[in-house]
Image (cartoon, rainbow, N blue to C red; front, side, top):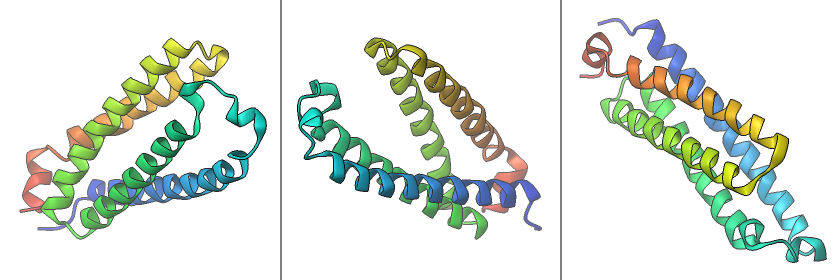
Length: 143
């Protein structure tokens, strides 16, 4: 059976977004290393301290690598990649919701608009992934 165009499109998108996420995380690690010794950074409240930021960066890097693996596997029509991508999409929607709730509790002002926009993007993008890769016609290609 021929590979549907949607599989190719989503596979490429997942790889692009994962690669951008990995690059962004690596740049954040660099910035984190430069900021860690600044006195004003060390005086920040707990929610912005080094342990939180380090956990966030490591989590982002892991998610980026998993996304990259899933995207490559999708292009190769591997069923494990389809399952991984579905789980990945669910996790990303949940993380987006947690981020939205956490940001609302932190009273970040106008920045909440960007968090809301990111959450809406996550719902649409990952919702489409969940819908598409659960379609019967698409599942058959991965069997």
